[in-house]
Length: 236
Image (cartoon, rainbow, N blue to C red; front, side, top):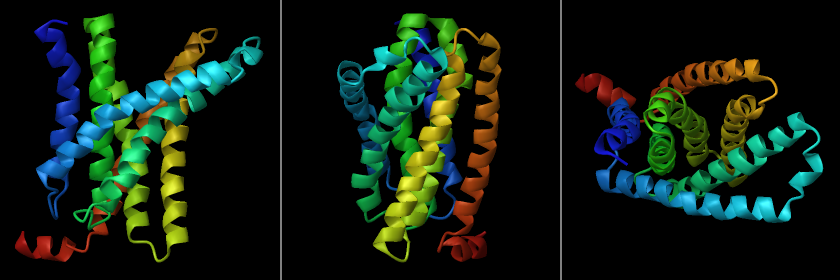
């Protein structure tokens, strides 16, 4: 990979990380914790690869090869979306969620996005190194923002779960966040995977636009829930 391609592969990830860092208006997270979250996202690629191998080796996908719509739905929602989002979720749930610095709802979004961008960082380098500049440009405006969007949805509910009234309510909210990320991720990939109906690819962009709009609403609402909001408003 040339330096030019490396810059194209990493720039959108870095841009989103910087944006989210400054989007956290009320109380910034320690860079060390954000760095570990990002690294765990990078390492989640290993989990995803192993899980994908298990799916391919032990799930009878060949039974559905005669029906492209079903076959691609299984690939998009289970083999890809479920495994990738589960890998990110494990890092969020068992590291960031337990961290003492997770002290406001918006932190769920911050940590989820940093974890997701770690995954996107590795994935982007792999794809761009194989596909070149065209893939780099395409993923800059599609795949990388999509990973951030999935993470916002997961992180929003993790932020609510952190301050839920009961453990059962917390678990329900965590599960909902994971479910939302899987659904949007699966839908995003599904319309790309169906090669017999290339016109459906436009629905991928539709999913991305709707998801990003929803992600902005969730970020605004999560930020408004901050216990530090009044202090920040007074200071500003």
